[in-house]
Length: 46
Image 1 (cartoon, rainbow, N blue to C red):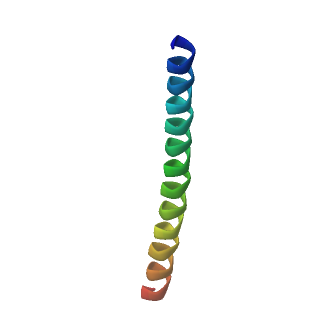
Image 2: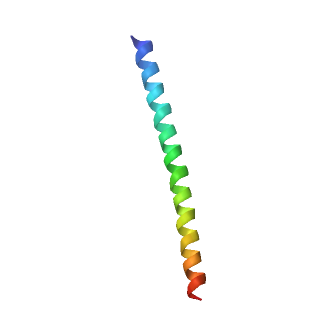
Image 3: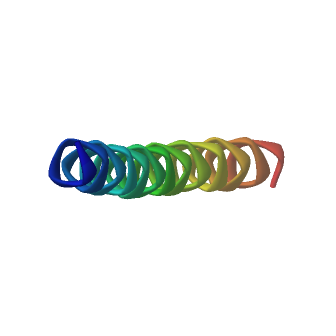
């Protein structure tokens, strides 16, 4: 019973860390895209 509980907790922690990692990667990608868009818009205005 305890072993099952511990395995479940570890899986929750692992999946949570994975989700955080994925969300960070996605947010970084989006941030880079937004910066590129802003840069392009500025260079067009000049």
